[in-house]
Image 1: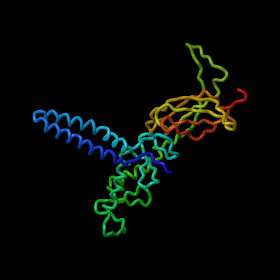
Image 2 (image 1 turned 90 degrees about the horizontal axis):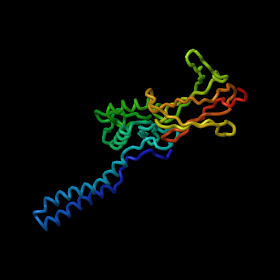
Image 3 (image 1 turned 180 degrees about the horizontal axis):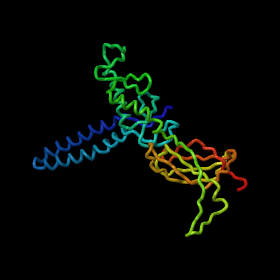
Image 4 (image 1 turned 180 degrees about the vertical axis):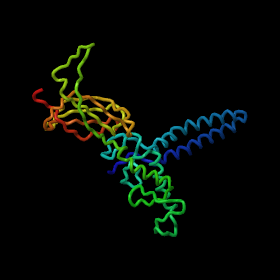
Length: 279
């Protein structure tokens, strides 16, 4: 994959902007200082305010370009849930981590040479100076980091599947219970037929779109919009949808799929038997 979810390199134009703002403040003060000593305090205050207004746009631009993007867009099977980004200890490292961890990883990469022993050692040219250890975020990762960073990398590796926007989908069935008023209960002839209850997790929180399509023709049979609430037991949200569609209990003839509310990714098709010839 050649695309990246974020960039940590701030643009250079904001540096020039700082220089221009400083020049504006200095020049205005000098001109007014020559004109009137009594007005110098007022112009000093004015120039300070002007400097801030000049500086704010460039500062915001610099900040916004250094903040890692969240799970906006479909980045394929390695797409992270909202709140996580690719670590990129190496270009192909798509382990999902926090923005802070990604920033730390980029920094550690940038200073890697300064933490290696210039004379080598028992581990060859990658031997770390005292106080540093190999990160080992991926196989062969010999960037020298703190012990805490190495521990974090190991933990993040165990969590990456849970943090991916995989839209794991499964289903169960339910039936309609009798409707009772006092001691009198009624039901219909179809209430006892199992209906599909669709469940999905590793989805972003928000309104998810659900489709039921015919297997062979791909014709749309039904659609739903349902809210993915926080899952709590795993990152991201969870969908629970009582579809009302009957489980016909024969060969697969249709499929459900779910679209994520943030990344817009679709889940893999989940085959079911929903087209009943006779109830």
